[in-house]
Image (cartoon, rainbow, N blue to C red; front, side):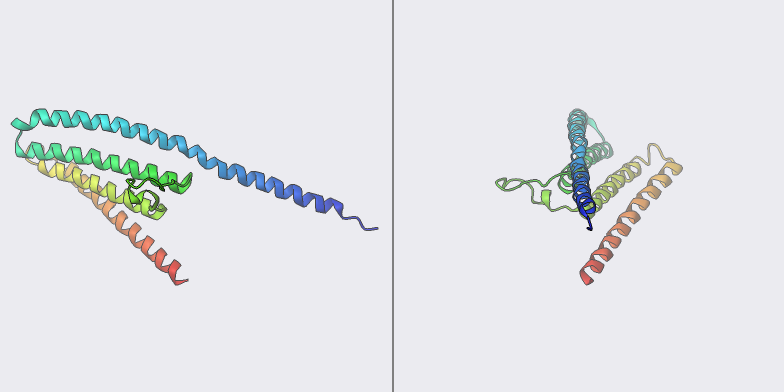
Length: 184
């Protein structure tokens, strides 16, 4: 008499434990949803900041110098780029890590909402950071007459160059990875 029911019973138990564990892992992605809600709240706060900056710009623009007007507009652009960055992270992060977004029946939604993968998200984030950094460097150059600080200027340009080089290296590595994947 050879009995083998014990091993046969342990396999279904192990499979059900494995499935349960996988289910918990997969469900844990929903823990990210509150983070995205928090980013939406931060976007609302940024919107209030933008409105305040816009109001101050409108009030001071008639008597302001050209450089001051340009600096104020660059500040508005800076806040707008940060808002765009938040939106990109919220939509792409949710789509890539939590759940698909159903765009059917929503013809007015931007097409990119469901098209940005993780590599695209990294590139768009770095491109936005480079643009924001460039605005800060430009603001410093436009303010060079009133408050020149060679050390601060050197640091601004250096950090900006680091962002630019990082963006280029990331783009190259993603391109090489895509070429390698398509070649296999």
